[in-house]
Structure formats: structure tokens, C-alpha cells
Image (cartoon, rainbow, N blue to C red; front, side, top):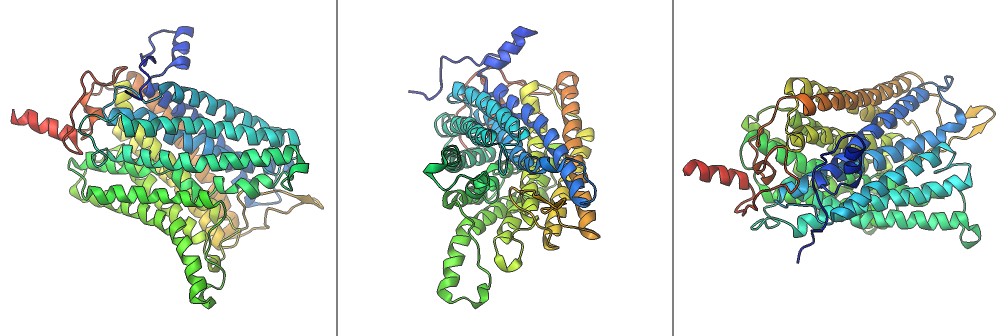
Length: 546
């Protein structure tokens, strides 16, 4: 018995025009489903980063109104919802769908039709959610019908993502090549499995709360949750840390895989690296408890029993994920002492992982009341570090696995500067908000802009360093958007007309490099028997011995 839908065809699109478009729309080839996610996520990133840059400029000076005051609440909601559920999450799920079956030696994704349906459900939900925000819906929205539409649309988005996560997890668990036990799965596959399983736990909680808020808002006599701000109060945990750390866990697996490939050696200690990635998944506790787990104000004056009652849950929700991210990043970065071959995927992955580490650490600090960061834009800085870390890693993953999808490579000398530009933009966007948070600039998960006596209450009257930091934040968002635009343009030119890639252009260690480039519809001409965690190294060694 197999979990793979043998009736679904993964044949590559061969038609042109409308026929080719129909092939893409109806495809069950996991490599194309993944690229559909990545392509739409890239478009969304450019649009959302442009809005975020506009808001950063708006916050720099309250006397300058770049956008209509009545639109600010929806623009803030669009930025956060877009960065998380239209950019980071689909990019990660898309990569996992496109890569995991190849890495585990499977000829197909498990439940390919479920994954394909999930993409279209996610896309439909995303379009409806953006539409509802434009028409004054969403958190703090003034139109009740579109507040409700936003709740239901977000449920559709989450359902679509869960369909993809289910397919990824089932593939990693049931469709591995003979001999590939869980200790031998590639690092990226392991990280995708951890992320998928944790999302299957966390996201249904978010969706369930959205349904409850919708019913309470639709029928206010049933509950006290009838205000349009109930979304932020009851579902805010699904749009902030530590839940968002779950979205970026595959960044750790990508760095480990790319570091091992770049050094040409087996990454050790393997078990500790896998454990670190697994520990990052304990961020799911934040979604399970559904409320901020904090160390109370005046912690030093508490009794030992009260201190322990704060420290234990804080360690489970915040410190264990931070420890896991640190261990995975430290071990992967430590392997780079072996004089790696410098390539764009490694640069993208390294900066992405460092940003994820920064965001996870900032999230933990945000929940220590004595630091007085709660209610400031520090939380936004942590969010941006995690999201843009994931974006950089996704770009690196496309540069790394693009040859396996299109059969051509991207030029290293042109791609590495884009990695540096993107890292600069991500650092400016996130670190400026962290510094502004230390300076006391107020913020919120879903800010509500209130107008009274022609004054915008949410925006503080910032000047000096705070004003400059907000301008630099806007510049950072713009640089990230520019990086993605230039990367997409370079990728399109390279993968259509660039230098042809060999089957193993990176001298890889895992099974995806054992098949042809581009990979055929059914991935492998033969099923490989795995004898170690680096099966391609074993295969190359046996050939050289022969």
C-alpha cells in the first residue's frame, strides 16, 4: 500500500499558449506546484514590502501624510498578514513541496492532488483577504461584512497551507527511498518535516479562533467577542512571535545542506544538528497556549515559587526554540571553517539563518517585562528579522535547486551581490525597529489608528534618531523589494537562456543530485538504496573504487 496517488500524473507541461496554461493549472507535478507557490509569493513580497516602505516613511514624520489616515489601519494589517501568510509561509511550503520528494528519493509527492488543491485554495483565500482589507475589513476594520470576510478568507489561506504541509509530512514519513531511516534524511527534509508537523498543530488553532471570532462578530448575541478588534485580541498570537518562528524552521535545514555541499564533507555532529532543528519546533507551545508567556515585571522581587512559575513556561515557549535555532546555526556555520566553495546559495542561507536567530532572540527578550519592550515596535523588528530571513533563504534555495527544476544555473558573480543587497535591506528594516523599540516608539501587532482633533493617536511625534530610524526602515523594505525584483529578473533570464547545468552542478551529497537536470516528471529512473545520510557521496565513492 502506498500513500502516493498513482492515478495523478506529474507529466511536465508540453503545450504552448492556452494549452500550456491549462497544464500548469491542472498539474500534479510537485516541482511545478512548489514553483507556483514561490512565484506568487515573490509577487506578493514586492507589493507588501512597498506598502511597508510607505508606512515607514509615514511614521518618520506625523506632519507628512503619504496615505489617507483612514487607510492606515488596513495597510498595517495588510503588511503583517501579507508578510506572513502571503510571503513567508507559502515560500517555505512551496520549497518543501518542490524539494522534499527529490531529497527522499521518491518519484512523486504524497497526495499530489491535495497539495495542488491546497495551492489554489490558498490563492483564493489570499485574494479575498486582500480584497476585504481594501474595503475596510480585517482587524480594526469599519465594515462589518468585510471584517467577517477577512476572517473566513484567512481560514481558507490556512486550510490551503495545511494541505501542502500534510503532503510534505506524509512524503517525508512514508515515501523515503529504501534504507533512508529518520537519522539519514537530509537536513532540509528534516526541517521541512518538523515545520510541517508543527504547522499541522498550530494553524488549526488559529483557524479555529478565526471561526469563533467570525461567529461572535456575525451573531453578537452569542458572545461578547462582537467588536472588530476581537481579531487582534483573540487571534493575534497567530501573527506574532513565537508562532512565526515555526514558519521559518526550514531556513535551518537549508543552511545545513548548503554548508555541507559547499565544504564537500559530511556535516558533523549530525544528530545534534537534527536535534537543534527539532528544538526550534517547540515554538509551537506559543500557539497552543494562545497568550503571551512572559516573565513578570519586578521579577527579582518575586518569591522563588513565583520565579519558577514564570521561568518554566518561559523556557518552554521561548528559550528552547532559541536554543534550537542557535545550535543549528552554530554547527552549520562552524562547518564553514573547512574552506567552503563560496556560492550565492550559501551567502543567502547564512544571512537568512542569522536573521532568524536574531528574530528568535528578540522575541524572547520582548517577553521579559523588566526590559520594557512590550508595546513597542521591538516586536515588529523581531517579526521582520524572521520574515526577511526566510525570504533570503528562499532566494538562496531557488539559486541552489533551480538547476534541478530548469536545467540551468544562475551566474554566481551576479547573484552574490543580490544576496548582500538583500541582507542589507533586511538588516535595515528589522534592526531599526529593534533600536526604535529600545527608544520607546510604540507599536502593536495590529495597530488601530484613531483620529481625534485631527491628530493620529498611534503615531508618536518622533524626531531625531527615531525619525531617522523610521526612514531607514522604509529604505530597508525598499531594498528587499528591489532585491527580489532583480533576483526574479536574473532567474528568469538564467533559467531560460543561461548556462546549462550538469546533473550535479554543486557536487552535492543528497539524492536530488542523482537524477538528471531538469528532473523528469517521475524524478528518478531507478530507486536508489540508501546506506548513509550522504547517499550521493557513497555512490561517487563506489564508482571511483570501481
